Amino acid sequence: MTDTSTTTALPDRPSVVDRAAWQAARDDLLVREKAHTRAGDALAAARRRLPMTEVDAGALVVGADGPVPFVDLFAGRDELVVYQHMWHDGQPVENQCPGCTTNAWHVQRSAPYLAARGVSFAMLTEGPWDEVAPFLEFMGYTEPWYSVRGLGGAVAEEMGHLACYLRDGDRVYLTYRTTGRGNEPAAGIFGLLDMTPYGRGEAWEDVPDGWPEGRDSCWYWSIDAEGAPTWGPTGRPTPQWTRPGATLVVPRESHGHHH
Image (cartoon, rainbow, N blue to C red; front, side, top):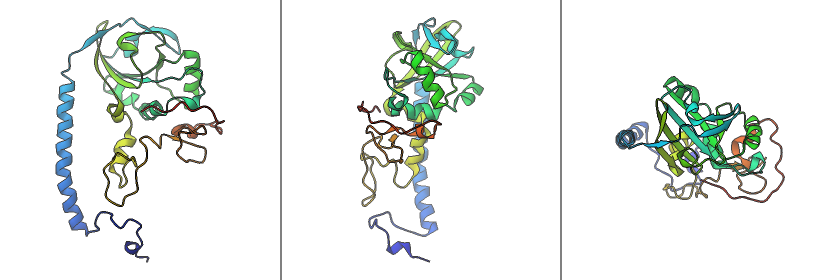
């Protein structure tokens, strides 16, 4: 049996100890993790007490069945969660936002659990419906999507956000909105990567000396046909390569990335 302890390329890695010592260290960290959880619970309690602001319940959004008033997205429930997906007009599917894809890909399976809890879910985008519809077919998305093209106010604010609404009869209120790293609860990949030895592999992270050097933020959100991370002209949002018909990407002008 090979003694890997003498062949490591990471001489400054965390110490190797027996299981009892590891468990003691793990128990110490658990105290901090529980404090972090309780702090998150306290933040959630404060979030539930934020003041609300009314939005136009009758604002018309465009879905698969044509225009519908925003209040219909509640499907008779009291609560609604939406993700606001960016859109690049006239661009092919591979040139749509990898950051929004990260969130949309993860939350697509959340709707049944939210509905069981009495919360409706929908995706909003500024894209025109005739462009959005073929994108949804390619991605295999089955959740309700709506175009908010041309709308203003709190229904169609800047994209790339998660937002929560409360319905009271025929009136609707915006209760919470977040973006950036506030969107991370929508994508389980972040929490999982944070548990791994190397973390997200991003340069801003605090890692042990000798650990692999981190790269630019979000570097793994877009890859090429060979699976190599790239934001270059041959890449597409990472999960798109799992879709039928995901062919090689013809080099195109780069539009940068959002996160």
